[in-house]
Length: 130
Image: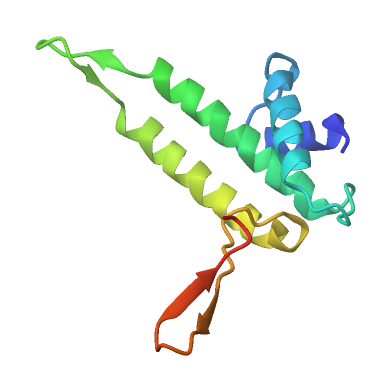
């Protein structure tokens, strides 16, 4: 995966013009997406680029949301509503991009179990994880 392409999409999602301070976010997202890819997936597939950029965008939104917290008179932190909403939107974008890239990614949440009925009427489960 090319960092420059991920950064271009990230700038689009984040609405920023300068990406140099956030290059590490793109690098982390590329590492994460590469680790999730199936062995037969094409690393240059556009869906993976969008997924990586959306992942970097969510991290960027979380970082900027932390900066927008203010202390209240009681000493607790109050997050600004706009920052919270932007994080929610970034999560939805990530979810959508993940769904589009799903055929190219490993599904670690998948669990396969087979049941076999024994002669005594009891069942037994077989699982490759145990």
